[in-house]
Image (cartoon, rainbow, N blue to C red; front, side, top):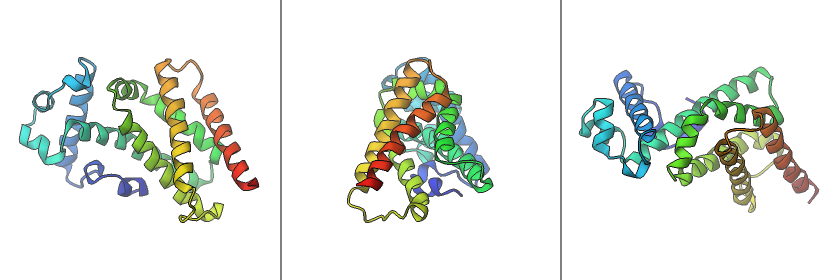
Length: 202
């Protein structure tokens, strides 16, 4: 299991039970379908369960709320991206700029879903997951960067990088991606790497 899966909540970790994984997937798909039809705030747990063709108790066996369900779907996307990125890193095919480009290329695949998450006014879900993702990536890079987990400014750096990624990503998606994913990735890399250079010079 990847590092990012262990970091995220237990409700987002794929179960080894095939039936449980299948039920979670049905519920995720049902929620996304309903979000295309009505505002997120108007969706009821009963509707989600009925659309997924599972019982209401079955819903609560896997998730605490519809927000928790949406969070699990966002986690799934982050987990898949992290696994693909890890494979490329192991092969030696990727660096910081390439990983930034890959990040936007990956979310481009899920643009419709991401747009629904944004429209659902659940920005805190995406932003919190971005923060956790950035923290994990920094932890994995720390041995090479010579950084310390006890750095008093570390949380601010995580907040800045994740906040920047969130603003770029959401604005890009809401504008229907008028700029290529590659150019967005390069822009994000240039902005964050300039901050890293200032840190090294400071």
